[in-house]
Image (tube, rainbow, N blue to C red; front, side, top):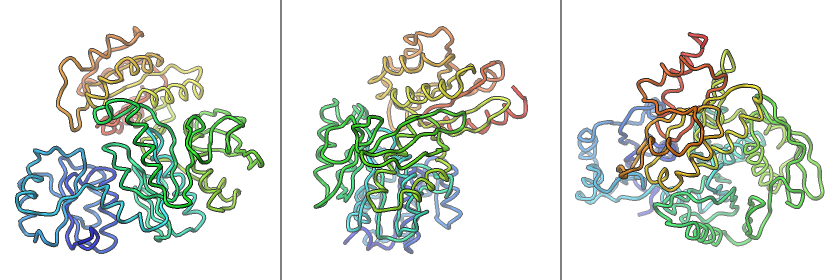
Length: 450
């Protein structure tokens, strides 16, 4: 039976950003959807508002599953779910069909015109910008995005099925399930070394992904990469490039050019050099879909960003910026943007490391990136799917940061330390639950005028 032929779908980890988008899509095509997650969140609340049943207690989920016939129920899970998960074990024992999210997604998109956005960083931003361009251009498409787009308050846009935009996730080699017409590779930085072991294995997997291109498929890539296809970047040797980049406090200005054309100036509302590059990647794809360049630039200028992607939460009395950055090179991009946008303001980063394995693999790189901020508050490592690794903790990271203005801060004491601090720009970074603290920091800034 094909994955889209089942009657019931149960998601283990339905609150995940990728899982929730798929759950919404299946719900919209009239499937019976339910699921489990460990904690309630804004994402699960949004799903419940649509009528999707979610339980947060394992035994309640098992009781729900007892009502379903295994022959017409598909269990969808992600690699983040451990093999000893009780719900997973129950489903296996009762002979439910179990499948990873990536396989279901690939069945949906592979028969259509598939645009797959890949790379260690920038996937969500490029996917979101391109989705906005296509929406404003009135194209028929569906996009699955790894973040909440501010313009749509969703990680899913269903506007027809002629084109599919998907994030091609390298974690667990999930993107090898895809058969795209267009592949965008924004960068290849060492990450997920718990899976790949070394950079060469990661690079080889990207090469295999490019090998999945359909006949006459096209690759769009960062100018530093060496695949056949179009290149984009800051060099005028690239097929598409950025010129005259100017940093403003809440936006970035630049011109988009090709070897033959000057497409004009863009005033982009997502600040930072890295986001200008993300916008260029989306532009490069859109122009090759034969869209009007003026319409593309208009869409770029109306794009209002993604939650947790250099999100400016408050502008006064202090500036509060929240970002998903959880890799050293992402943190480098953030600190570079902050210093160029606010050169005369003092800054403080609140960083929550994500995963013991990533902290272990990039301990020195994290330290080098973080020490460029004026002050550093380190929270404890967010474990996600992992067990602790002996000797790997935030205290160890703190020791090797060459900046005296640094400290370990507990979740409980974070607000107290922030209240006592006089930094003018506060940046919260991480892929864990640090996002849940942003609202209370915002209230502290506004109410206390700190």
